[in-house]
Image (cartoon, rainbow, N blue to C red; front, top):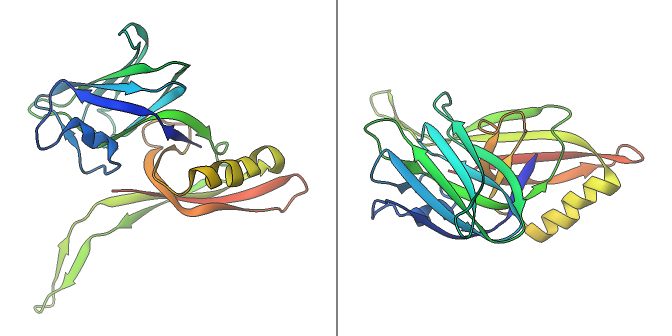
Length: 237
């Protein structure tokens, strides 16, 4: 499991945008406050500071995404394309070769016909590898904030609200090389904030989540050289 930290986006611009839904919305960590283009194809250009190596995209309606890593002078370094049409969850994590100088990330989106491109949030930056993939499995749940109102006629009225995912689990790690890196070097410095997480590298769509540590990771020292770390991550709307 890993997280993008620190976020190193310097600026964001789009080739088209609805004035009510500007490109800058992708930096606000609110997935429902989207950037909206004006057509079914659109391009987002992100200027990124040095030492970045991953990009995460959240809540897009695009069927296809192409990510191009370019120099500041627009020379192509590498590119990646992802078909999201088979997924109901439209998040996407892409690692790329770490760049030691400022550079650009150009993202081309294609949404279904008769729709305009939408994107909720984007993170780009360095990567903190918090844990290995969970040894003991991961528990996944759903938070439902829908409002249920009992009515006088013995029926109920339901006001739907977003469903948010939660992930929790335990991981066995080496105490000296990993436990203190997480609890002291990362958590103490970075603090409790919203991160782009990749829960597992088994799939870079389904396991990509914009969330926060609902419970700060804690450990139990059950073995001479290893610790069991418990974590709980909650998705943000």
